[in-house]
Length: 437
Image (tube, rainbow, N blue to C red; front, side, top):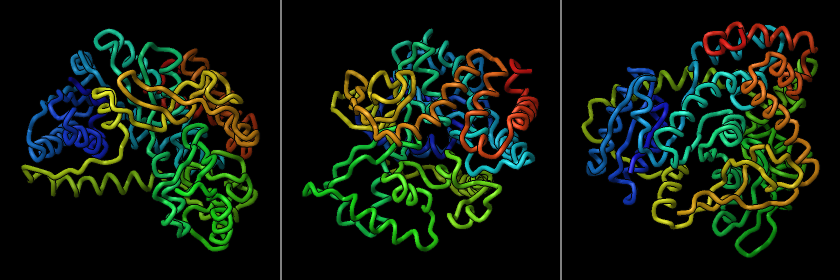
């Protein structure tokens, strides 16, 4: 069996996913294909994975493939394809996504999922995914494409609607959502045996209900403690404000959710950023720290011939194992809606509970979301669908429309400034977006 990892230069993530596979008996003898366009990062990943491989008993076969010319060879015969690419990288693409909007007075925190940063990241990435899809359809048409790259809903939704590739989008925020909430509120005793339902869209899926092992609804106590905790500064204030104002907790972190709406980052209300402890420009800081940290870590790890690895809760290996062994496993997956959530569009990519087994990925029907939650999701879905349309048609006006409908951008900028900002971004990203030149 063959597992192909696209974007294997994302070393820390490749180490987790493929290290997990090496620790899984049903996957341990797989052929592992590492693919990237960056020779140095690919070499580093191969060295680390070979050390993990040796520590796991050395039963897999690891081969590296460099550059577009070797991509089909990397994919040929794969049963699973893991995607973790970042087109344009931190420098210069992510820097551009932050600095040009900043000139117009538009501030961001993460800029990888929605907002103008998410739009530009999707436009850079979808053409590459289209190339991937053609190769997959040619040399491994039955493979499952496990997408980890953001913006999750835009990229997974494009693959699901416009290619023949079996695609599921994966994000760990569902896995840690209620655990993080309960621990942060001192409710650890309720962790074991809890039953929950989470549904919506990626990074804005809702903890719709949560009960303890005894069947008692935990939300009343959650709301009481969340309101008390939000009286002092902490790192999750936006989501706790959601609990008070919307009645529900959300899957992704507060720094993400602060930029998915028009309420928290407002130039005319500058005190909000401090009041809700919102870290503007957070993602660039993380990138700089991660790059420096990785160089130090690699220098230490490179000298070791073996590396220990403990299987993580990252979805990929568990999905592969469930499909290979036909032992069911539950995930929160990003799939085409197609009637799963009644009051969201059929063509939207939604995040819902899914059962994985030998038959593939089977999503669960949720029914309608509470109307106000569906309405908030729609403000994000509008941007996602318009961005996919822009990438597919390569029409500059469609990019304008996506940016105009983004809730945070629209709350801060005039239509004329939005157009000018988009033009500046498309020019700066011309290397990756020649179709918009």
